[in-house]
Length: 333
View (tube, rainbow, N blue to C red):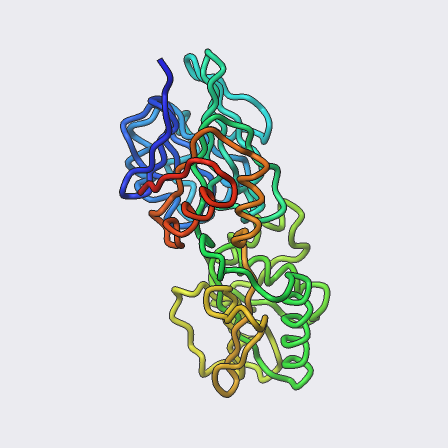
């Protein structure tokens, strides 16, 4: 009997009756595609209810940095598997592949014994190798034709580095706020261009150390509230502080605040000034509308479900897929 894909209202993606992704369901195997909060929800429940919880090695290391290792290192159901290396569970084969979203992010392919293939893009950036499957769940974050920027990522990076460099040259202390993944990318882009101390809170410094272990950063980030970090912050010398967008930041310690998120920036300009000493920069980690259509055009699955549980415009994307690609597309979540 052929098994199918489904997206539950809470965002859990079902790839048949064996594998669930990025949320909890009564399936024996869970896949965590990456460590953003909306993809690791109900993780503790999963620890006690799944035979296997699969992820790429970097995702496992980041999960330890976020949740702490205590009690997790001994769990034999918490399994890291390399990209492209098949994991067999009963009559299904599970393959994870790169998603180009953040460190450790993956796409998921589940192949049944009869050869029928189910897939889930997870959150993905561009370029990325599309999954070749019969049925596919697609991230619909940029599902509207209006979600196409008039500039490229190279321009964003250039203007971002120039902005921070200019602030530091003026002897200013810079606060950078971003989501997990974009925050570490900001560190990576600046580390060879701006030679001042980089500070972060304990958790963000631990996460940055995982990025360093995977060759994406070459220096340790100084914990903001350690002795060294306090001394730097209390001096009048320039430094860069990195903070998650959800953190409460003592902005009086900074001369300039830069928010890094494409959702906060118009499509016409990669960098905008919103107030004196406040800026927004459009560094994105999602494929835009045209890139999402290109992915689907290359993959051409028989059935498409658009994940509507995590924002975006799945309804418009479904209409565009039917009209432009003549493929069936429905909404899930």
